[in-house]
Amino acid sequence: MDEDEHTSGTQGGNDSSEAATDNDAAGTESDPTSEDSTENNESTDGSKTSLPTTASSNDSSVSDDPSVSDDPSVSDDISLPDDTTSLESSGRDRSSPDVDLDGVVLDDTDNQGLFDDLLSGEPIFENKEVLRPSYTPHELPHRNDQINRMATILVSALRGETPSNILIYGKTGTGKTASAKFVSQELESTSQKYDVPCEVEYINCEVTDTQYRVLAQLANTFIEKNQTVIADRIERYQQLVSTAADDPSALASTEFSTVAEVESRIEQLEDDADDMEEVPMTGWPTDRVYTTFFDAVDYHERVVVIMLDEIDKLVEKSGDDTLYNLSRMNSELANSRISIMGISNDLKFTDFLDPRVKSSLGEEEIVFPPYDANQLRDILQHRADIAFKRDALTDDVIPLCAAFAAQEHGDARRALDLLRTAGELAERSQAEIVAEKHVRQAQDKIELDRVVEVVRTLPTQSKIVLFAVILLEKNGVHNINTGEVFNIYKRLCEEIDADVLTQRRVTDLISELDMLGIVNAVVVSKGRYGRTKEMGLSVPVEETEAVLLSDSRLGDIENAQPFVQARFDN
Ligand code: ADP
Ligand code: MG
Image (cartoon, rainbow, N blue to C red; front, side, top):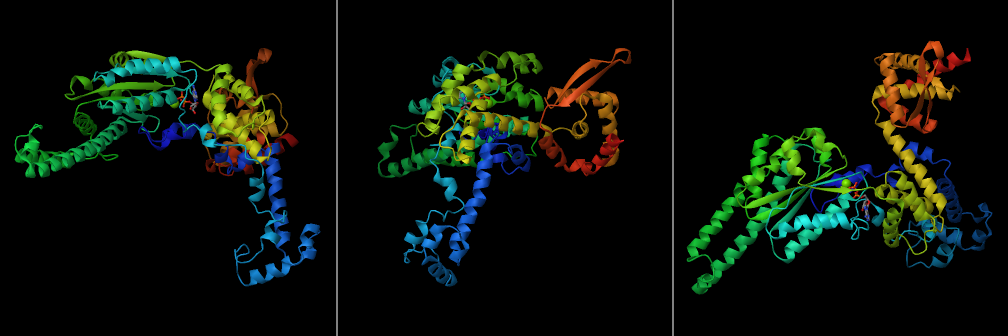
């Protein structure tokens, strides 16, 4: 998920939906389950074992007694122990510049600190940030058509006309957010260049997901901008007042005929500034928030493009009122015009819209198709050139990342995640170069992180059903059938005091687990005994169990295991 869309919805801020979806390798490190998960992972093993070794060699070198070490290099430095002892006992820093210990301590290759070892290898990354979702690339290969279409529509804003509303569709990772942000930066910089009042407001509706919040955020952004405009004007008029005091002809080129008029304008501006009241995060009636936004945006002449990213999330959560209100504003605004650019991951979301909203919002539609493996290669290559040191990748790394991500509906975010994670794994195993095996390890790690996340967020009842499957599997049952799952499930529910659902409902929950790719169920016919589902776990047992057990609502489900054991022992 993406980093920057969650932290701030405003344009130029960080895009936080990316953060949420970002399967950041570093971010999951503290998770005990993810550590387990990489147990078979060469790279992780490498760094795990290297740390204790480093620490112990460090210990021996600072030891008071050189004889405790078998290492000849330590006993060579025969003068070291005395010096060290005396320095330590006097509480002084061993690296203190006025003591010439460099020769004895720092040249001792065995005297590696905790981090020295990790730092010692040639760094693989030149600039890792470039591979993170929060980075907005300056070049977007294979999105020229879409970017040009957006620009062709939005250029009206620079002519002071209202651009058509735009609806952008495409699956996740097809470059919608990146392209929209790129276009908005270009639009704003051009508007500054030609000094035309055109502004872009970016809102991530996954974070800002109610009408109140969207309107409040817009209102407050425009209030802030208005305050700046007002402050500038007041300053200009005050200067005019002081110039005109010495030289009355200074008013000639202005709209004012007397200094008093200028002063009264200043007063009026000060009143305007005082009247603008920021919208609190909650508490006002929605129509008051709407009016405040309306007044703020209409305070002076401008064309405003409102980008609603992840617009499907807003509609799903709070309906289409926001879009309805925004789309009919233009007929009432006196000084300003707004244009809406909606961005959706869900191709069918307009089905839920009021027909008026649908036709207004979809005046122009732009589709972002999935990338194919070749396009993903180009995208990765562009980023890799900046992100990695020269020759840090073997030739097959980028094609493999591209191929894996092409299978994931052509998701560029996944491709970049893979490349970054592969680099991190290589770095951690102190490899000199990122190779194909690191990409495969990264693919496993990301996939496992995904599973962990899906399992972690399952409803409690599904977790109990899944736990029943795990218990059966751990007891060596193959082709587990629904009846067996249901029996264990019932016992587990009794054990932890949870409601017991009907076998029918449990069968439904199994189907859901199947759809999520957690179990793999097939319907088998039992002849005249009817049909049943047979299933197996499609995710790693240990890690999945650990995630389930970390849920406090499942209480001491762990203690329920013996009865299952007993059942199979009989
Ligand atoms: P979406 O909004 O469609 O889910 P994003 O715009 O967030 O996708 O793109 C996902 C990631 O892939 C981002 O890091 C983005 O910078 C990168 N990306 C997508 N398309 C391109 C492209 N054509 N060129 C370079 N990077 C891209
Ligand atoms: Mg996006």
